[in-house]
Image 1 (tube, rainbow, N blue to C red):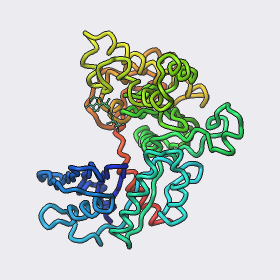
Image 2 (cartoon, protein in one colour; image 1 turned 90 degrees about the horizontal axis):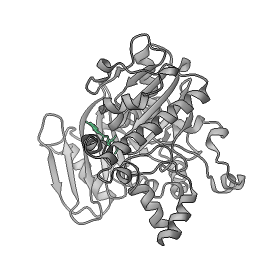
Image 3 (cartoon, rainbow, N blue to C red; image 1 turned 45 degrees about the vertical axis):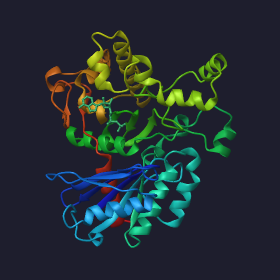
Image 4 (cartoon, protein in one colour; image 1 turned 30 degrees about the vertical axis):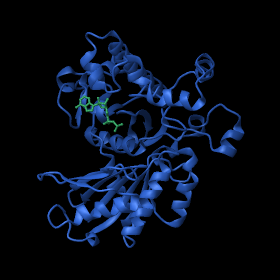
Length: 398
Ligand code: ADP
């Protein structure tokens, strides 16, 4: 069975084609600058040179046609016809309270995703364009939507409600939805596998530390709290996002500088976090490389790790214990130094790092000492693979 995973943005479509026999990636790539001059498609097949198509692609339908053209191209393709593709799995950022798992892309599902556009104005409309385009170019292929928020639908109201007037929740659906759910779900299960224990028996804190970063408390396999909120701006400090701040800072700074609410929100999303503090880069590699001669890069790293630590401690407290801590995504998987700093000072609750184990290159491994009370792990996340798996599972067991 071959499954195509699609991640559609407003001007881009990323794709990966999986052979589900061994979950290998047959081809992957992206179309960028859809609807903008200079659109292009870069198509990558393991072991071959990249294939690039430069052509103006006015909309998502033309982009999807180009993707299918590349996948079935006699020279550069990996399938002889699109009939070989059994299903398409679409990544969807916001599933609101409607979806606690993947859903077939029926008219009803699409209407609900449309209904949620207000909550994810940059993402859901783009996902819909991707789905419509797929439906247009491969009308007989089943499609499944896999939601970033679905895993967090098990949070109790104490965790997902904000202490605001209750009508904000009732009338406007203001609540915590979380993000990166597909990743948190995958790594919490993979962690249980590495430990040789059922996920139902574990209290785990999963730290997805990429450009966007979020931390989740997973109790007995279920998300019980997560650091991102109504939007992905909340929680820990990120590459360019502030994470949690005193909301009154917004009015204060707007009065001081004359910024509009839009400008202020842009600063919180695009000019804060590692970039805002270090003044040099949103990228952890740059901050780490500069930290010895640049005190602000060092401060940015300190602040980042401090916030991760704060969530690990808080989530252990609210779960009433801790069996495992998992680090994943770009920073979590590739930076032993950051993992170590995030766990510093947590030995009192059994969280410790073994330097020799921790310094291994990326992969799935345990980085705490043998016999430690809490198992600290590094796990490579693969959201596309999980989307492909969930798509297959739903088709096989509707
Ligand atoms: P996103 O998917 O949210 O855009 P990623 O998961 O790719 O982000 O993570 C990006 C972050 O991971 C950057 O801060 C980058 O510095 C860091 N990162 C990625 N690869 C490496 C690496 N090989 N070594 C160190 N840091 C890395």
